Image 1 (tube, one colour):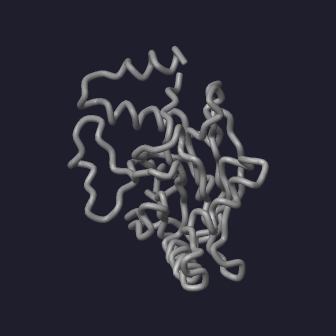
Image 2 (spheres, rainbow, N blue to C red):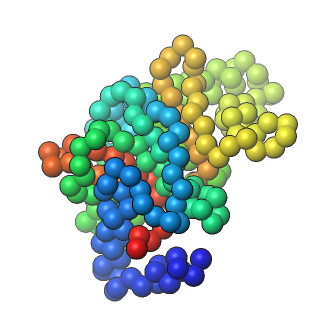
Amino acid sequence: NLQILETSNSHHQTSNKEMTHLENIQKLFSKNFVENPLLETFEVGKLHLSSGQLVASDPLITPDKQPFTVKFPKGDFTTFVHKERESNCIAYVEIIFGNQEVATWDMAVCDGQNIKDLKGEEIFGYPVESGMGCFMDLETQNLLNALESELFKKKGNDFLGIYEDFFHQHFYDENGAIDQFAFLKPYENKQGTIFAFETGYGEGFYACYIGFDEQKNPAKIIAEFIEIKSE
């Protein structure tokens, strides 16, 4: 812990904090593997993007989240979870869009957000109140909302909410917690998948970072929940 605490206090003046932060992301994730003794990496599956409009959200509080302004490719993309070894909590989630080398990094933004408006350590991100975050295509978000309406109409007063009636079973069974992440499909007969996961230590406000190749195409995206300083 000491190592993490020491380095997190070693930033320069406020104006440089975002820079140092981006540099840290760059050091951790610019290669095609992550080499850090404080992190353990798991390849967990593939996320399906039908439109290339990517949403990152806590779907329980922002069911109509805007997608990022960057257009991502369509298809199925390898997804990694990077856990902080000491706490066993999810520190980063990473989606890979190709094997091209990352040349530059930027914070992911939605319409109306301008990185130039940020001061010091400020970030654009998404709020998490349920302890769960997710990545999904905008079209999948629409499917999730359609499922919620359907369940509500079908169950009426017995409808407990989209978490209890859809998400919960993927994370818990009668014996307790099953896992910290899961791929879910709102409809079995439709392609849309949601990658849902526990966000770091729980509630918070979390940013995503996009790595671009030389041609300015997105090569990967990283969601950060616990900052792990690179050596």
